[in-house]
Image 1 (tube, rainbow, N blue to C red):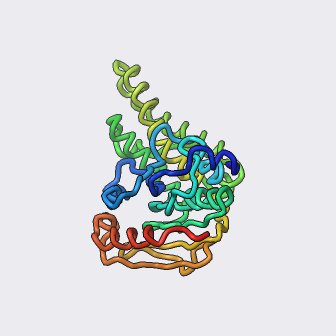
Image 2 (cartoon, rainbow, N blue to C red; image 1 turned 45 degrees about the horizontal axis):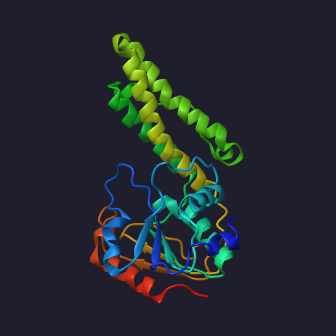
Image 3 (cartoon, rainbow, N blue to C red; image 1 turned 90 degrees about the vertical axis):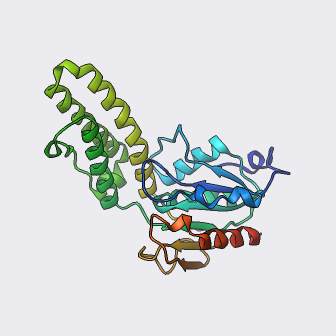
Length: 270
């Protein structure tokens, strides 16, 4: 947990800022950067940039983001998060409340928890993409390794080890089929697996969240078909704004930019 002295050092007299947790990767959905909040005079801090933390709980992941990009103080107006980055963002906003005594709004776009099922689905998707890049037949892109809720909760390092081994096994399969290219295939498999592990570890951390109370509100900005909880866990109150947009186009919608600008103008609560 960052301390008060660390927070106060060098965090005064800064332009109002916004902290963003948005894992871009390779996706069709518009990023938070599409809101172009910089045009409204805000310093936008995109925290999920390489090198990413290799932390297995949301609180540790958020703490490493603080130490890498902070300290954060009264210049911050809100924390914004996309999809399954929301649980990690909540730990970050809670740390800011402890360090500064100021409670910030947590704004989530199509926010949701990282469930064992979603993590398993992303692991299989990563394996499929890796197998495609290695020219493996579709039938051979299914990785080994079982991920269940108990393992992700009780031994997340073992869960990550199994996912890494499962991805690298695809490289072994491809190298066996094309021994004349084995060295190049192995090198590619290592590099690509590491890329996907950043994402999968991010999800493991988000899964292992405590949903802390921070004394502030949550605003859910949701596309037309996204399921929302009536009360965001840990928030003093929850506001849900449904936008008539697809998931992919949510953050391109002009209405969303206006909603976020209004939240930032209102600012934090002391």
